[in-house]
Length: 139
Length: 132
Image 1 (cartoon, one colour):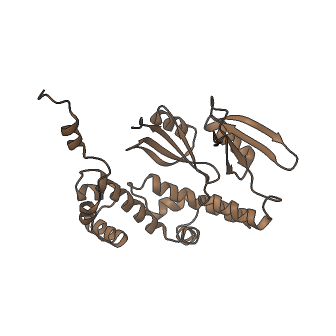
Image 2: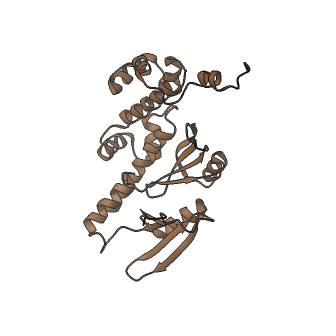
Image 3: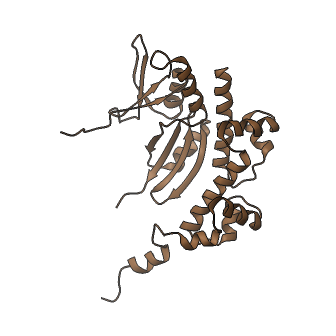
C-alpha cells in the first residue's frame, strides 16, 4: 500500500487575518477551513476547484514552540530564510502577473520564459516564496 | 525587540527582492535604502548583518548568476550579456565574473555542457525530411 495524495501542506504566517487578506483577497484562493480549536486556529486555504489540496496557514508560537524559538522562526521567515515555498500553475502567466501587480503584490522575479515554462516569483507579506508558472507540456 | 527585528528583516528582504527583480536596472544604494525606508549608511550595515554580505555584493552575485544562465543557454556574445544583466563596463563584468565564478565568461561558456540542443540544430535535425 502506498500513499495516494499530498492533501495538506503547511507554511508559517505571522498573522492569520493578514494571511487571509493576501491568500484569499489577493491571490484568489478560497478558505477551506477556519476553525478555532481552542488551542489553535486551524486555517486552511485551497485554490478554487482544488479543495483536496489545502495549505495550512499556521502561526508559530507557544506551546508548539517555546517563545524564544518562535521568535527565531518569525525573524527567519521575515528575512526569507524559512522553507515553505508554494508552487502554483496558471494557464496565462502574463495575465496572472498583471492581475497581481495591480493588486499591489510584491514581485520577486518578472515573468520569464524558461525551458519548462513561463514563470514569475511572488513574496507573501511575511517572507514566504511563491512561484507561479505556466508550464509547457512535458515530454 | 523581536517585532523590531522582524520588521527590519522584512524591509531588508524587500530591498533584496528588488535586486532580484530589477537586477538589470540601475540600482544604487539610495534607491535600495528608500525601498527599505532607512538611511543609506543604516541600510548597508543592516543588510550585511541580516544576510551576511553587502548589498553591492548581493547584486553582483545576482547579475553574475543571470550572466551564467545567458552564457550557457543563449548565443548572445559576452558584451551583450554584460549589458543585459546590468553591468555598464565590460572590464568590471569580466573581473567580477572571474572573481565569483573562478574563470572568465568565455571559459565558462566553452566548458558548459548544453542542457538543450541549440535551436539551430533542433531546427536542422527535427524538420520533416523532404528526401523521401
